[in-house]
Image (cartoon, rainbow, N blue to C red; front, side, top):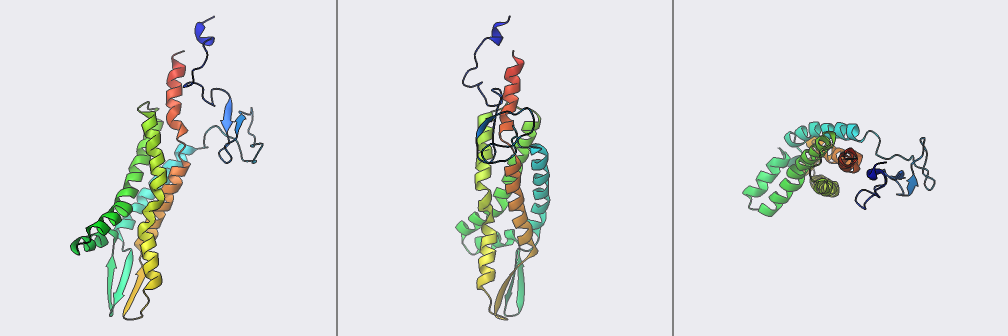
Amino acid sequence: MGTDRLSPLTDQDRTARRMGMVACHHCHLLCRQPPAPADCPRCGAPLHSRKPNSIARAWALVLAAAVFYIPANLLPITHTTSLGAVQSDTIMSGVIYFIHSGSWPIALVIFVASVFVPLLKLLILSFLLISVQRRSRWRPAERTRLYRITEAIGRWSMLDIYVVTILVALVHLGALANIAAGPGALFFAAVVVVTMFAAEAFDPRLIWDGMEDRDDGKH
């Protein structure tokens, strides 16, 4: 009889999956892995070791957000009417306007929140999905932190939508001045919401499954 079968699990190796346990995704109750599909005894939610179809659902949402990202930056986000003249502005034209007017901090905030952060989220989620599919063992702790940061900052990309909503609600002066939301605002809101759903669909525990497979292969 080999000694590996008798060696106790270390704290690092003692995972819920190896011990035949599963955590409820809703109330986080730790239950024994049922032999057949079952519900959580506390909240009644279906029990599963990993989010079902996590990679496929996350990829579908990431690709959809990438498609929405293009018109969100090319189409006007606002239509401003002033003394009969209509001006349409995209996100980048607004950034350029604030730069030319000397409002560098405002331009930087809009660029980071509305252009850089959504694109960065798409790149990070794509990187995490590719690394999981390739069973990568590279820095799992850092990749998990990267996912947590991506999940936390997602809602702050709605800054432009908040500004447009406030302006549309406040500026109604008839022919003198009026502000209306453009089609770019709808696509931009779709990018933010869909990337939030993509981050929610991704299961970060998949990052660590590659490490467990490596450890199991040693025995």
